[in-house]
Length: 342
Image 1 (cartoon, rainbow, N blue to C red):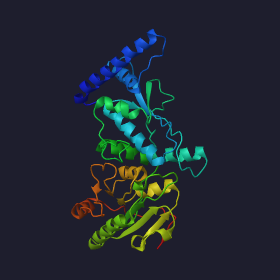
Image 2 (cartoon, helix red, strand yellow; image 1 turned 120 degrees about the horizontal axis):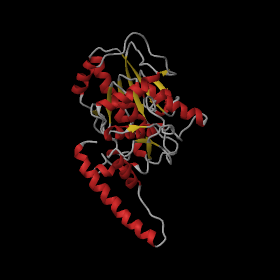
Image 3 (cartoon, rainbow, N blue to C red; image 1 turned 90 degrees about the vertical axis):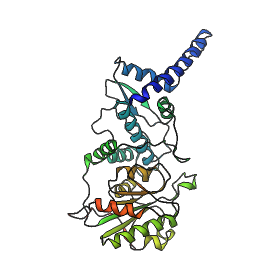
Image 4 (cartoon, one colour; image 1 turned 180 degrees about the vertical axis):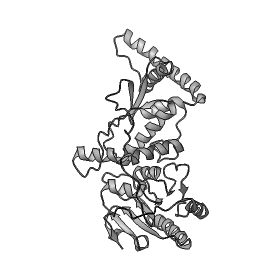
């Protein structure tokens, strides 16, 4: 934990715990059960750890999160791992419990997501460690984080309160991801465009990608690559039917439509240039992608991402400079995806 955060943690922790301690003592006196909040329990556990009275670790236990897909589960787990590293705590892994949008039996579905991200690689399992495990859940995480400072969302969409991941933690996420796979090789620079459409259960149209915005961004990317004489291939990753997409977006592109979500995410992660969409599925791909990421200001952009305007325009000069630093994956072609050439 940064030294500057310790006084705030102690003041907020003692104040909250002290208030609940007094109230609980009064409840006990009249025969009622005491009540402490999750942040009180975390405060005591972490204080004991700081005083070397216990050996604490934290885990991500995503209970009551069954309405969220793999992207949301991965993003919250990343945030918990980052939180652990920031506080100087070990992370103990709890496998995913329930992930929405399953397209196969539950155990196979969960195993596929575990094998994709490998968040448990190099970590003790929460169920096996002899340390004091504090479980971070979707409901207790924000009150616990508030012990260390004000929680300021990037905008109304930033319900995850996503942090700016450090280069070190991003490298760790990528090491975990590639611990059971190797980066693909391609003779051409790959541009992947994630066009988010409706998911089952979607109740907010603000998450749906704009064809016109993404078409403008893709057109500008293509123009720069053509001007630079860079041989490239464009892949559109999305849902729906080909008839729903405008020709301006599809022309000359390979389509990965309604494909295996695991395979779709791998395509996005492996891109040399990723045009991300709204939502955590695309966001997680951006974090793990070591190419150029162009995003909307929907969730807070990571430190090396390029942000496009509402109309789709972005900083072409910055993109060109990044192209000079991006080595095309050479030495063979990538494993073929199930695609349609338009």
